[in-house]
Length: 100
Image (cartoon, rainbow, N blue to C red; front, side, top):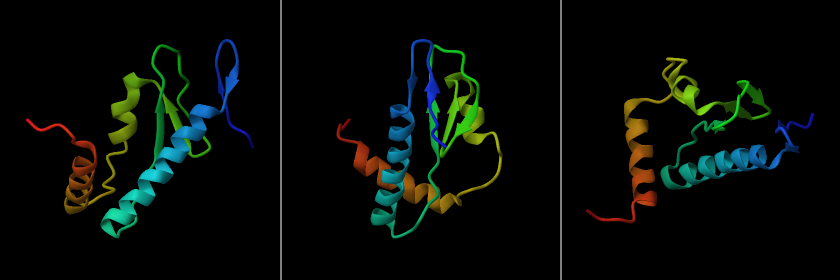
């Protein structure tokens, strides 16, 4: 099945493909950096449109106003505190290029 986002003027698969590829890249990068495999989910938040929240293949589509609920709404513990800290330190090292 081919999933696509239906816009008022057209249909598009590129954003879904990019979100899925970004999740794959992050999963692989975290494994290289930590030696551990983590589940990485794709979420695409689209501002400015009436978005019907749904899963389109591996990507969950939502409105930015609902993003917090989508990310933590399940209230299910997925990562232990030490895993969160490990991931946080790796991301901080990768993303921080400005010193204060």
